[in-house]
Length: 248
Image 1 (spheres, rainbow, N blue to C red):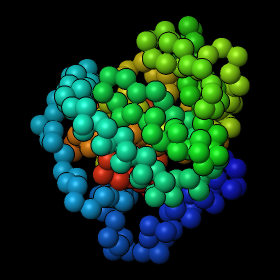
Image 2: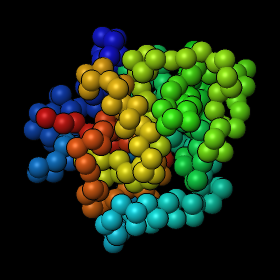
Image 3: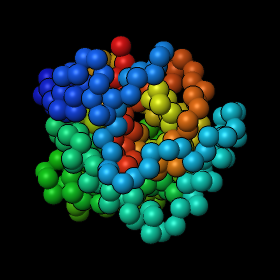
């Protein structure tokens, strides 16, 4: 992680009070014994309660449960959430964490990052999108306003061949889709492991800031199952704001 990116994240961290309030007494801080510390930068008037406290516990059942909830959101809610997520990204201070941002192209009810992509490009940030190779490797490629997208092997748009490659170490902030997340920063994905393998190519100190993107209804009030190879998140961005997970 470049020094400038780390400084940006520290500036965001300090601005939200986690360094200035060592006793955790600030308005965004919650403490959970035995868990990471969490604070939330929330949009006023949005309820942060979990709608699925009785969710099942097996990974397969959890995926079915939360994917069904996500897909049930109507077009108006999806549009509202996409605009809110774009706004929260810029007001949270994440733009200070580096110049190159890895995004995804939404499918299966995931929050749409197209409004965020367009604003990042207008702000002269570098934007990268993933391509999944036939051998299961995921790689990122830089996209500009005029970069053509083609339909990939999973029916999801991706940069066309010939687009400039972005090395894993070249990504400062990586926004990752997810099926569900919990208060410890655990992410439940679709199960293919593309992101875990991509991040596993880098030592933890050289990984980008990892921000999950979800709808609030994908928040699990119960801890999600996690294995040793699962890479935890630094934060989760939803229509309600940014949750940041600070580990000891």
